[in-house]
Image (cartoon, rainbow, N blue to C red; front, side, top):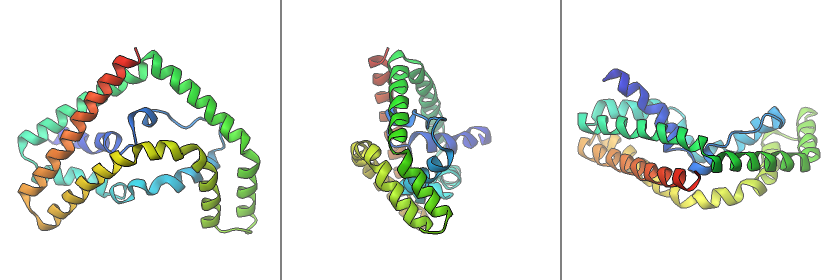
Length: 206
């Protein structure tokens, strides 16, 4: 059981905490500036900060190991394995590969179009003319133009997940085993629903 449990946290982080299936599989292009990409990530990392600062991976694993029933733990493992398999299949579909190529080209074009602004912000930060926070705000204004639509689409989904996480957190604080398992079951149901959506996406992109 220890081996199974060790697999739960990293996959949950990749499956439940990512914004959306379509955008989650798109990796940052290597042709953009590594420094500006890093700064951009810092601007956007707050979305799940509570569950990524230890609570998301180690914390969730501890909760599952300590409170989840054997049946629920086994179900999580099964559903997460299904998720991993579906994600691999999705990445290999012609439709997604084509979309990734298009989005990569769009990101490169976007970066090139704003390269002068980005380089200027980096130089001002290096020269001490602006603070790191100011640089982040300026980069947020630039990259927000690109990511705003995607974030808007995912807002409803993220709010639903956040509610379950808050429910789980409150139950853990009270050490209410029944409530904890109830919240974990809801997370697993979300995972199962996501798996169904993944399968539909695979079928649509063949």
